[in-house]
Amino acid sequence: MTLLSERNMVARLAAGAVRMSNITADQFDPAGLKYFTTISVRAHWLISVICLVELVYRPHYGVIKFAAYAALTAALIGFTAYLHYRLRSNRSVTWRWLLALYGLDILLVSAGTVIGGGFSHDFFHLFYYPVMAAFAVMFTSFRLNMLWVTMVSVVYLGISLTVGDGINLEERDEKALLARIAIMYAVVATVNVASRFERIRWQQSVQRERALERERVDVSRAIHDTAAQSVFLIGMGIDTAKELVGDENPEAASTLEATSRLSRSTMWELRHQIDMGSIYEGRELGPALRSHVSSFTNVTSVVADMTEAGAEPPLSTEVKGGLFSIAHNALANAYRHAEASRVSIGLEFGEQHIHLWVSDDGIGLPDDYAERGHGFTNMRSTAERMGGRLLTEQTGDMGGATIACLVPLER
Image (cartoon, rainbow, N blue to C red; front, side, top):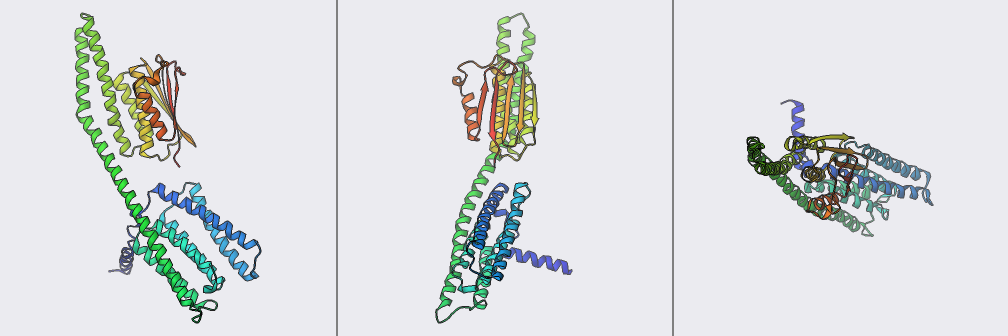
């Protein structure tokens, strides 16, 4: 076995001892991690402001201590600014960056404790507690947290015993020291248990949602392989019967035409479930909707075109599915009620909002369209669930109706 292999094995064993090898599996999703990092950065900016105020407002220490505190504050501001820059520029932020931030916090608090005189400082040790609590919230491994608090306790114990006047046994300072260290363990253990409990609940919720999405994908495939095929064959049979009847029996031809439209409408509703499967599989909204629009033309013979502007950002399944459903229902209205011969769909990704609109050249919307059926009520509810709003024009640019939805981008 080579020396490199031995080192890798030792590293894997050490990682497994504190469950570091699977540390990312128990953490937030990428959006949650970014949110937690954002909160941490904001908190550090507040701490930086407080440190600056302490430096310039009625300083009660000499030049050397002032320079040391200023250097620590500069290090805190510098690292916080760099993390802020990564967040603002949408660069990747991993748990390693937060680990480095918490490590820097412990280093700065320890250095400040040394500069302040060690154990004799009245309050500097209190800064350890929020740092370790934040660590326990982010990293749910109990072993890792115990290792973390033990390392910090050893550092603080060493500072208390060696820096300044040390501890005064006559004043029973050792009891105060042990109490401070015990509180460190209590804070970390309590926060870790609560955070782990909430994380387990979150993971269970995610697992249920993923199971539901897999079930929806299975349903969409089953519909495609069974009901959709049957409806398609029924539609072909009806169209063949129409050709056979011709103009000899107007009443039968009219009935067959109505039945043909009904079969196409039914086929279009089945396409909703079929094409939504790609959304649940993680496909982007733009390509999924473009494919759905193409299906609309194939099913209904109504000409439809789609335009797309802007780069699609990462969107949740709820938002993609909601916009997809609104577009589907708007297309269904254009075919069933508007007697449209052409439909235009637009999807625009702006800096603040997503704008979706469906316009047709049909007869427009009646005055009481909102009270007819549940179509518009469902579309409006879907838009509101996403934090957006539904907009309608009874007579749009194409002569028929325009249905639009404006949804704010997720943050």
